[in-house]
Amino acid sequence: MKLELRFFASLREALGVSQESIVAPESVKTIADLRVLLAQRGNPWSEVLADGKVLRCALNHQMVEANTALQAGAEVAFFPPVTGG
Image (cartoon, rainbow, N blue to C red):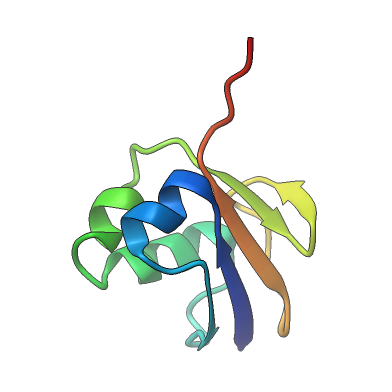
C-alpha cells in the first residue's frame, strides 16, 4: 500500500526528512504497524519512533490513535507531543 509520510518539528530534525512516499508491505495494517516498520530502519529511526516514545499521529489530517487502520494512498503525519503554557 502506498503511503505519504510527513514528519514535523523535532521528529523532522532528528530524522533529517520532512516527507517521503513509501510502499508498505501487506502486513502493515495500522499506524502502530507503520511505526514498527519505520523503526526497523535503525538509528535514528529506532530511537525517534521507539515504542515508549509519545508521538501524535494524523491520518489524512485527522488526529488518530496508534490502532487506527491505514488506507491506501493515505497521508500519515507524525508529531512530537505538544506542550503549551
